[in-house]
Amino acid sequence: MIRRNKRQRTQRRIIVVIILLLFSTGFLFYPVLNKRIEAKRVDPIPSSLEQIEADIREIQLPSADTEIYLDLVNKTHPLPADYVPSDLTEVAAVAPGVTCTQLRTPAAEAFAQLLNAAAFDGYTLVLRSGYRSYETQQKLFDGYVKKDGQNAAEQYSAPPGCSEHQMGLAVDVTSPSVNYKLKRNFGSTAEGSWLAENAHRFGFIIRYLDGKQDITGYIYEPWHIRYVGIQPATEIYRQNITLEEYLAQQP
Ligand SMILES: [Zn+2]
Image 1 (tube, rainbow, N blue to C red):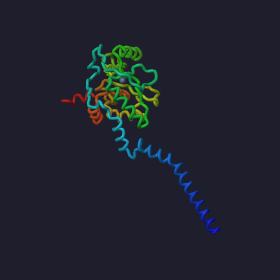
Image 2: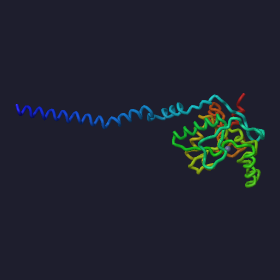
Image 3: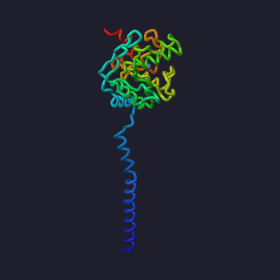
Image 4: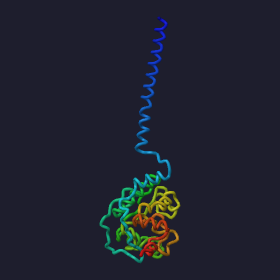
């Protein structure tokens, strides 16, 4: 009798210890499990490249993707000196110390989405120069002429009225990896390659392509992107042509 009681007590103790153990482990692991479940629900880890693409499309698809901006501005198609876009807006992500930080609203929105997508892929891109007034372009160009002479300056800078920056639809893009400079080697950096391969998805084109100087009038500028809208940008990217060539194809 005494022995059975002792055995029963021992069994009860074992059961209590087991119950306590189950409770404490559940208690310990619950927050971890819960966190995992929450993390999975809020921010799933993409399982494939297609998934990543789908996520970006879902998050980033520009709302202004139906709008098209095909006005041609170049050395033979200048803007009036008094042309100022009416819908200029500030861009948030800009290189340190820059002053021309505005774009037309559709371009600014598309550019913000482009920067988000770049960040999603691990690249930091910022605006180095956006809208420039006729007067600002005049000062800039005069400075280049003084430094390099008229002919040389015209290869890489637009005379006043002939700059897409006056349209508010062009952005010079740079990154910390090139110390926020605008240099040809930006095109071969990871950021520059990303820009060349993805800008069209947000309605931008690399405006001055390598080897197309006879058409565009400008040397290769891997940093200068121009907003035209998603559909034309995608077609221009697919054919690897300039805006001039694309416009010549249109009926
Ligand atoms: Zn530019």
